[in-house]
Length: 390
Image (cartoon, rainbow, N blue to C red):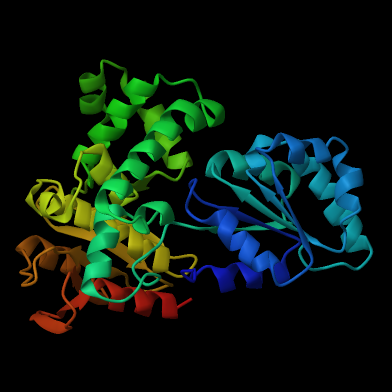
């Protein structure tokens, strides 16, 4: 069993809040984590995709009221949006009786929809945490393990598969299931083949500036439709939209977001990359490594961290900008080379931002200076620094 870094965070939230929402894409490990937490206390688990469990909630107030002394776990809560109003009534009734600790742990695979439903009924009563797939600190230490994580991605069945073929087969089935079943149930009706082509186009353009017009032209769709497709994949926690960093530097800034397919293993499955040697030879290797690093760093960053990227029309650029608290931001460049060399554009970006920390994340282990205040640092070491700030 791989210990999840989010486990103590969720346990702490359960001690402070009447309800906790655990969000994340399907197969990221939400149910496993919830059941681990439940093992240490009286609890009841209901899977709202199971007809028998849904039947138990035919009279939800009565059923849930009879489990007042337990932690109730409701999996795939977006399947039963009407429950939110019932939860509100039960939480408020418990508070009037002096019950302050959590009663409900709700799990969901669709972030925006779930937030909208609960915001209307559970405002001030629920706190949220997002469980991503495995990150680089959760797996076994070592170069080979990190290479496998980059190639296969962090979804547990993919990362833990017996071989590369089994891992790739699982990811292809995962993509097909999302396209053919989950997205039609959770979002608007979108032709599966069109969405597959769109998802694949995003993988080819990993880490690029979002150009809706170009994507729309390639798919024969309108720019507005492409925007809705991006929104859908972002809402399902499958794609990340990284906003441009707002800075008053007197220069013309790039204003469109960068877009990443969040899991590197899904990128590689969409592009038909089955092993590590094929990955290194593929043109997407650099952008894929960048997306892998960005997603891991954001998973490790403390709550409330502001994140973006910086790019000017004149060529100044930082792959990731982080502001952990009030004050000067950190500027981060991602390099795949074991002997990283920094371009003038990153140094200009650091000067524009007056960056407090200037870092180049690379695949090696040693930490060393690159000059002009820039340090080369491993992904794992920088993640430990960020996670230590929580």
